[in-house]
Amino acid sequence: MTGADFQRLRDDFPILARPVRGRRLAYLDSAATTQKPTEVIEALRRYYLEDNANTHRGVHFLSDRATELYEAARERVRRFVNAARADEIVFVRGTTEGINLVAASFGRAFLRAGDEIVVSAMEHHSNLVPWQMACEQAGAQLRVVPIDDDGEFLFDEYEQLIGPRTRLVAVTHVSNALGTVTPLARIVARAHAAGVPVLADGAQAIAHAAVDVQALGCDFYAFSGHKLYAPMGIGVLYGKSEWLAKLPPYQGGGHMIRDVTFERTTYEAPPRKYEAGTPNVEGAVGLAAALDYVARIGLGAIGAHERALLDYATARVGEIDGLRVIGTAREKGAILSFVVDGFTTGEVGAALDRHGVAVRSGHHCALPAMRRFGVEGTARASFALYNGRADVDQLIEALRALRQ
Ligand code: PMP
Image (cartoon, rainbow, N blue to C red; front, side):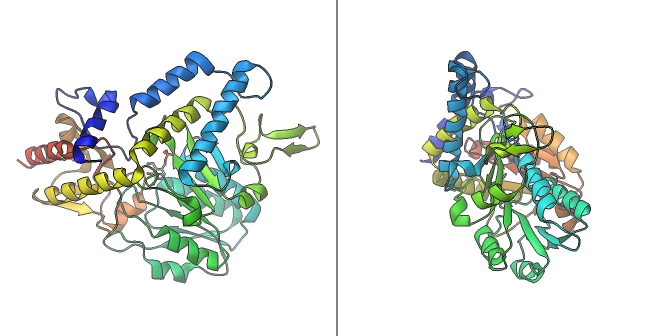
């Protein structure tokens, strides 16, 4: 795939043709959510035109059809992340729900007073607050791996934090605020050497590099469909089968039980044990279509394209007086966070918006990471497969106009 090939992919995303504030849209907020290709939009439409019903096998034709599509989507996800088994794929609402599921279930079953959970200083609130809640309930404690001035994960400090009271490590794969890619496979290997399981927050990794959960070795891996060209409201929690077998269910309700009496309920095997209520079949169908789309382009090519764009953008923002990049790790995902002297991040975001440039401004749900850098927020440009140099050039032009 060449740069020109990627330029053509912009046409796969109809919303990108929509002018914004009278300008061509430079959508640089894909870390918040990606736009959707026609193929995904059409899959959703087809689902409601032809296949919609609730998922119960053997009840009627459409119900069987919806069940088949839902389970086919699970298998599609399994292949995408190279899980050993499809029943290790739990459909959830998104990364947030996936992490809350593990924090609540693991916390209830395995966390006791005096225990410790290790997180990093650059976690999104959704990989921090659920652990705080679980710790509070158990009388356990959070231990925080520090980061350096570039936003690098400090591995030596991490090793020091792993001790006899450590029960779980919860760490991001790619930081949404700084862009840092953490050394996840090494983090997992070190934790496992101490018999400690690892949950990875894959929200910012999954659309930008091939993720192989077996090669990474992590026990849990959570991500959101909407950051991967799929609809909102569908996400995935990968869990190793031995963990999914022994954790208690997160929510109770329909679809997850084997038998119910007033005295006692027995549960279905995973993944259904963790999928109480009517599932998001529409979302699963859209996710499967998105994975087909992404796989056809290839995550290797997507990652290389985005890295080239990030390098180009990083070099070009150097032309802007008083602009400081926050997050300068050696290995970064498709994220460029920055502050501009004399302007609040809200002012920067609003000024860019007037030029049709969509960036996120604020604390990115990572307040502790922001404070580590002495800022309350940043403006953040983030890249996806449909971005090109024209988007970066429009960003630079808007930043120049702000400075004048
Ligand atoms: N973790 C990270 C690193 C994220 O970037 C996000 C989304 N901003 C989340 C978790 C939460 O994802 P969601 O809101 O889709 O549950």
